[in-house]
Length: 376
Image (cartoon, rainbow, N blue to C red; front, side, top):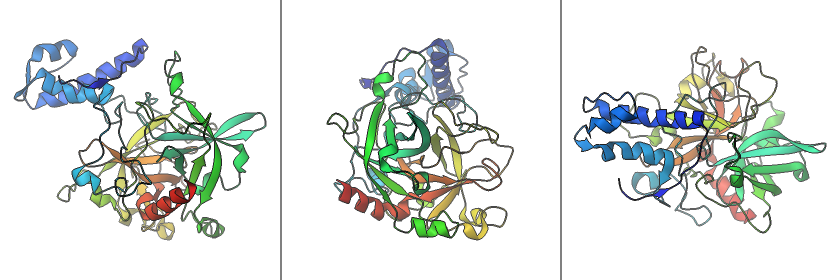
């Protein structure tokens, strides 16, 4: 196996078992092409060759996705054409990396139930809290896009004074033993910029232009420190549509992206989740989202999109408390992710009963760049 920058962590037995199973699943997928049966790690070691390559070739992608990253790698090729990063000095060129991969096989995580995220699985995830009395309570999610800027939904903080807002990055609450406590970074906010048209749209009962930018105040003279657990997401280029996130000849299955947050884990829940969770959900066609059984005339395809499952029996979705958080999509096979959507709102039927609604970030890329430029 080639040399790489490895990050090793001591995990509880249950966490280690989960990750071990993830490696086995990845090896099983690879081994299937060579007719090798892999039931456990011993089988993998004895299996020898996977589809014309040796064990190291077969195992490397799975293990590297879980534990390592070869270091900074700005997007190149087709992926570079899909993002604004690299086209302007306002955004970091190194973005969208998942040192502890969210794409690695794992017990199905979801915001409505499921498993907690492990540290570094969603490294661009920010948490927005609001002071109530003498303590801070969870309000919304956000997406790290630079070392001082977090993207979120306008409806999250429209009625909150800036002095009450706190932003945390590098937090999962997954760690039983405190091994990842050093990853937590806490900031106050120096500026909140709402989209100019949001408040007028709100008066009409819509969620149009549901987007905002938070500028962080340096903490002890420092802004966000990027490491193996905290990374910025890439920002899609202006006008990028979801059809452009995959090769043109690939039509099925629907493109799936990751949504994450601390939202409710069931429709009946009265409190949000104490741990960060995530789920992989498919993007849904504009024709379905604009249909009478979905959002009808409230759906505006230019600035919104839907993601989730059209079958109510599939209980995976974003939910209350996830608002403002990221829906991150893979950039072809680059291993990088861009924040294609901001969690906006659920269907009136309730989360999980119809696909959720998301602010289309690519429509607002120029607005984002303008906001970053004025807040530097």
